[in-house]
Length: 284
Image (cartoon, rainbow, N blue to C red; front, side):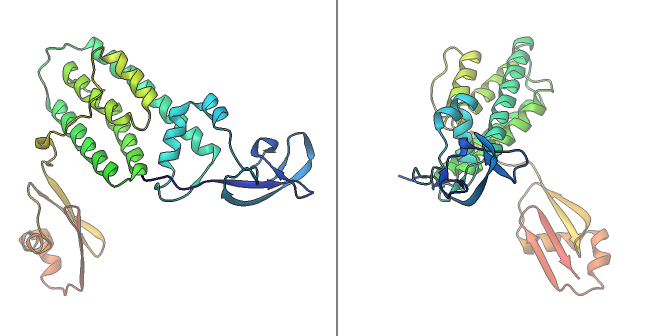
């Protein structure tokens, strides 16, 4: 059992030192707080502490769910911080999660409309292959996050999914392949936003099973690595390769590049900063 940290909120007191709940307090500028039933009476804002009945700094979950939906609440609790740390409850945070759910619902309608208009027998293109790769790589990424209890990183993956699918649906895709990948995406979203995922699945497939999608390993390998070569922090060249290099192997390959040779041959290399398969920086 791995439990979430405490949920925290600001504390409030009136001029007599009596605890006030958040729904008894109002602020127009986010700095100066007053009582709702007496706008002339100032409120003292205390430290952020774990929610408790004694300090009255609790939020009514029923009201939040009525306003924003259960999916938005789940999304916010998981996205705000790693599960072993405390959460600071903010109105801005819950509103941002609510907006994301609405954005994804609009994307769903876009995908559904596209799948209805496209020819099902269309041959898969390069864009379809890119879609297959992304879907399998993101499922693998979320699997790893689940195993590490890194639920907040799953939320960042959901944003990746939205951005990728929002762009890829503008291209010509096989209807069958699009729906097949999208169905997998909805299933891996179910632990976080189950209500919307179920609704979306019911609209695109009448006979789907609640089965966690398996990763097709052939789509996990990247085609090429593009390594940025820097000299004293300034980019000088990009090294492209289909294989992964160790630092020593990469340096040997770079020294063969004419554009880089002129910098390295007549200068002493003081330090090398290497980020595997991404960047190498020679400090000369």
